[in-house]
Length: 377
Image (cartoon, rainbow, N blue to C red):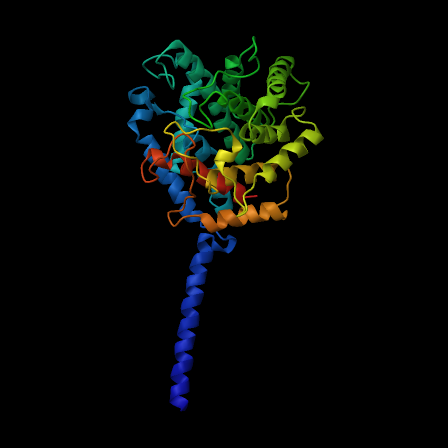
């Protein structure tokens, strides 16, 4: 009997040790918070590498070759990858982060030459697309460098950031009904590259201007005050007809730029975003606007990773506590819906796409980046 008890004890001890080892490995990857940081980072890195290799995104030639900065993959990567490094205690940027910064720096420094075969605008099929390309890239370049300075904890903007912001103001529209905004790429692709994308771009510009450390202090520069005033007026004047998606971007912008929303207006936007939360704790992109698929298929009714993560990120930025029951439920949804591949599910509101294809993954690219941001607060 003693021998039997000894072997039973020995076997139980081995099981406990094995379980401890497994738990230790899980905690090392981030499961203590209920999601896998390492897997999320690997997914983002693989997807940005796929975008760099996507020949349709190539711009320029030879040593001046670069890759189109996409709203679905590249821009979210620039926002989220440094945040993930901070969460995991990794100081050195990835090679892909460095590549994105280097190509953006090159294009910022050669801003006046972009409409040439040597560099090429994002799109140059006609004069209207050229205007839209100038405006869109001006905003995205400013965002990339402003957030890089922010993550590096600079006290003042880098030379590249200052130059990107100078290009931003140069491209701003100064007359007409759209003054204060930027021409924006319109391919009829919601939510970023359609008619309403112009407002999204302006809100994004406001976020860049106020994120760049030490860049904008009201009253310190008359010319800058005038440019910011035009931007603020545009966002205020056109606010009433914006869908919830753009309202959420305005809410984010209002965190840094005074005068965009009154306290009551801010609470109204917050309340309206919380009201469209689904019963499972998530949000769905189709509920953030009057989007219609061009292939006639119905919009997805399930919660998706992009809408859920984006809304949760914005709400936490403006001070809604993660202890709030609705926020907590949404964060639980994110933790429960990360896939084994490290990403979060999301779907196009423009057509039904095969989620296993390169293009079919675009929305999951954005979803994964914003999930990291939402879970990092």
